[in-house]
Amino acid sequence: MSWDSYIDNLIAQSKDASGECHADRAVIIGLDGSKWTTDGHANAFKITTTEAANIGRAFKSGDFTPFMSSGVHAEGVKYQFLREEDKKLVLAKKKGCGALTAQKSKTAVVIAHCPEGGQQGNCNKGVGVIAEYLESMGM
Image 1 (cartoon, one colour):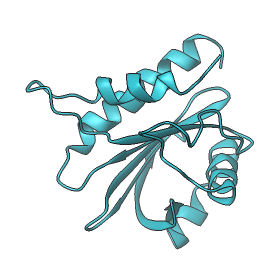
Image 2 (image 1 turned 90 degrees about the vertical axis):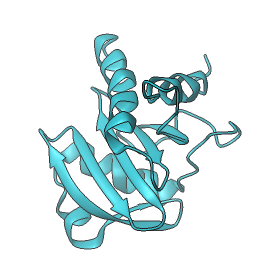
Image 3 (image 1 turned 30 degrees about the horizontal axis):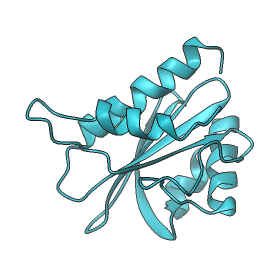
């Protein structure tokens, strides 16, 4: 099964009422940092193995202090940690680069990039739909 189709679904779920998408790239990783989606997808959020491992570790442990002190690193960009909610959702932003939304399911983390000028709330919605679907499937 290819997980790459979930990238398209997430981006489609981030559309606003006018049809504009507010997520432009996405990736799904396991809590162990393994990448479920491939970098070959046109809209892949191409995080490194180290970045995936760090994000997975933080979500698995529920300890986001490394993000608070050092930011959230993805695609070589350091995003400023904004907040976490319920040990399941992390929001981060970098002026001029956009924002990052990451949400945990039982076994994975769904991560999407919101382009500069996009509405992160709509990006959050797209990430939430996929993470909640995975959760409902026991994943």
